[in-house]
Length: 271
Image (cartoon, rainbow, N blue to C red):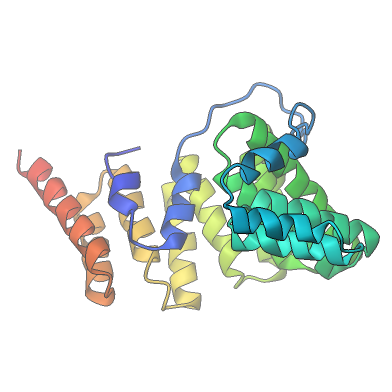
């Protein structure tokens, strides 16, 4: 990947930062079986105890008060607590306990979304494997109940593409979503990211531009398009795309960062 990495993208938008996760290279694996990451070796109880170390006295009292509640109210209250404290892995755990007691599409999607977020926030391979495995299991339960939930299928495709050793299974799912709904923004966006990773830049540009066509307010796409052109070696088109983003954005920090990068590209071109 070029020098336009995390430091350049910070401030552009949350979606851009999420997208960066898909543009970064991953280690290739030789085993072609689509295995769901194992959940053994990771203790959710230890994870919770570790999270509690950062709580203040008032928060500890709140947690203690929940122990007197009956299920499922206790699970719901604890999940909401960890949501407020931005620990999606624990919120997901308690949402999953709720879902097992009342297995509905909504209850499992509540767990799945949080496991997905926990996976993306995880700082080590053990927790990443655990949370993506849990996300896959929860999204799979959603699709058992409602096979037409394309948002869940899209996220499941992302989990397989980025979190297992056979990305093609996830790519196939994303393509199936687009076949069903050609205007599904998130599926197209992530197919674009995956196209960049596999050096299929023309396909990536086609998909990013399709997202723009569907939703012109998605000005973050101009950043993705610009970076794709950079990786293609077409700095002239890249600069045009970055300039378009600048003209449409009111994010002064992002504009300054991109402006600095444009100058870097122009300096390299002049050498």
